[in-house]
Length: 269
Image (cartoon, rainbow, N blue to C red; front, side, top):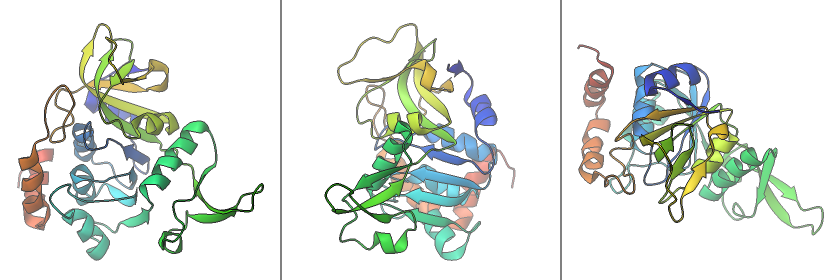
C-alpha cells in the first residue's frame, strides 16, 4: 500500500545506487522535481529508462547519475539536442554513458510485457530498420503458428518507476488525466514506484478519461505542487516554453551546466 512521504524521503528510501530507474511522462506530467531530487541525493550508476528523454534526463546525465540509458528518442522538444547527453556519449563527460536504443513501439511493448509478468514482447515494428543490428535486446523470432518472422524485445521491469500525476487521495490512490503515455504500464512493471502529485485531496472526483492507479500498486506518494515544471500538468499549469529554450544555452556549455548544478545542489563555488 502507498505511503504518503516527502519527496526527499521517498527518493532516499526507494532509489538506490545501481538501480534501473524509469521517469516516465509524455509531453506533460514529466517528473522533473523527482529527477532533480535524485540529483541532489547524488545517486550514481543508474540505468535510466524513458521513451522520450528530455531535459530532466540531460540534467541527470550531466550530473553523473547515469551509467546507461535505455530509450527510443532523446532531445529538447521544440528546441534541439540534449548537449549533456551528447557530451557523455561522445566524450565520456562527466562519466561514460552506455546507450540501448529502441523504437517507441518497442519501448511501450517492453513496459507492457513487464506489467503483464511476461518475459518478452513480440512486434513487427523493427522490420526494415537497422536497429536490430545496433541493439542486442532486439532479436528475431518466428511465429510457431504462421511462420511469420517477427521481433522480440525483453520485458522492462525497473527497480523504481517515478511518475507525476494531478491528484492522490490520503489512502494513496492516484488520479491522472490528459496525455498519459506509458505511466500506468511503467508503474505496474516496476518493483517500487514513486508518484509525485500536484495535490492530495480527500476524495478523487471522477473525471472523463482519467486513469486511476490504486494504492496497492504504488509504493510512495509525495505532494509536490509544480512537480512537472517546466512541462505542463493538464488542469494546473501550462508548458514553460522559455525554460526549454533557456536550457539549450545552459546544457551546451560545461561551465554553465556546472554552475546550474551547483545552484541546484547547494554547492558553493
